Length: 352
Image 1 (tube, rainbow, N blue to C red):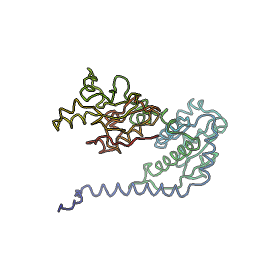
Image 2 (cartoon, rainbow, N blue to C red; image 1 turned 120 degrees about the vertical axis):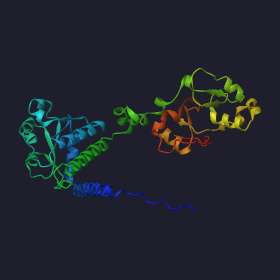
Image 3 (spheres, rainbow, N blue to C red; image 1 turned 90 degrees about the horizontal axis):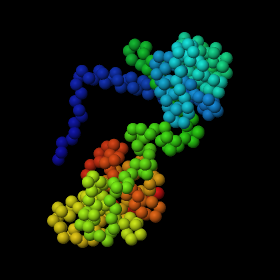
Image 4 (cartoon, one colour; image 1 turned 180 degrees about the vertical axis):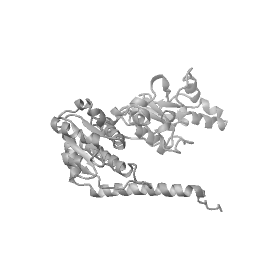
């Protein structure tokens, strides 16, 4: 019988650090729970105002609130609501010219008395720009000047000194995220819309369609199912490395089976050399799993992972192969642990 796994031993010197870190995270979590409970109709009014915005959403804040504001502006822009960040100190030196009456200003200040923010208020009122305040309470200077106040409540900052903006900026960030996402949902922002704004990195890759990501043309190996294994292999030699799967088709050009390098390796391991001159239909995987070229790449990745296969043929509406997704092309998108040894394709067709 295997001995039960023991809990990892934490050095005494680390216990105090871990205890403090857990208390900080728990305290900030409590702030978010309270913010969620106390959210009221002012939030809905802010969403309505942002949906009616015909200009830009302009986010401003000073210091740590400004850093949070930059992230909120970026989230709005990436979810279908054009936005940018305005530094309040630069604003009073000419950058106020970027604000128009059709815009909505989202101002962040926990105290509501931040000098750089307060100095903007007369100019904002004069320009006719709508103002949403994200602040601790509606009665401070910023709150009193705003059209809509999203009150965060009064919270003690975390840590022994309780001075550095922590709990307050966590609440600001959560409020900004909630605004941006709810607005995007009300606008009907789709996965395809999101993909247009995120073409790079692994996120952009998984938001692509299968057609954009599949191997095609000379990178494919397509052969007649009536040929022998040897004829198929000899007829598809080339100077470049190609996909490790041969897609077999019938007389009408429709996909009927798949033969992989792994299938060939198993024949050689069994010393079944005579099989090489037999019809490939005897050893191919019939009716392999396929996917449409209009599908999202994330769907293809899910199939590769769930079915534990390495190659996924792409077929058109007539069932003819037009491409292939190879696991090596999308390995960075696979869930952890799903890119190990992979079984032969199962005979379960994938239907859109």
